[in-house]
Image (cartoon, rainbow, N blue to C red):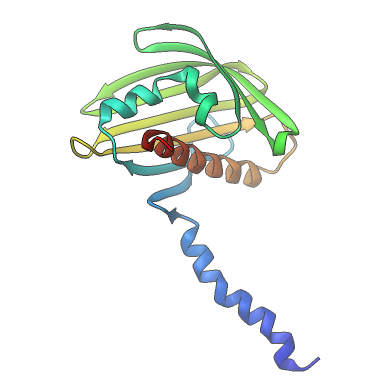
Length: 187
């Protein structure tokens, strides 16, 4: 094999790398990254986008906990066990590893508003994970546009390196934001 033929695959790989690296943090109006959450060993994922919907409509969808299994990827169950005011107790069940494992949690959800920013946070009370936190942050950009951030830090009790779990948290955060945006668009 000539030197040119041996170098061609390497050159093609190198030429494609900057595009992939650039797309790794922002695509289709969604930005994402890994984040550290206090009290959770594995890094979480965070994704943000701006949706063409008024804040009231976004909050209505995000606070409709029973509908999560209708539009969020991998959700198999989402049942409201109790709700009073700005608090709720919800049972969630999610398939991971292409259906090979099921994660579940009973989460306490608390919604609050401070300076125009609405935060809806779910923390695991019990379940088959070492830790679970999910948080929506919602704030109006204008009367008809709303910025939404979703953070997920799940530490399942499965033998996987922390880097793999962190990557999955990041990927799921991005998918959740995309699913919410599509749901608000009606598609």
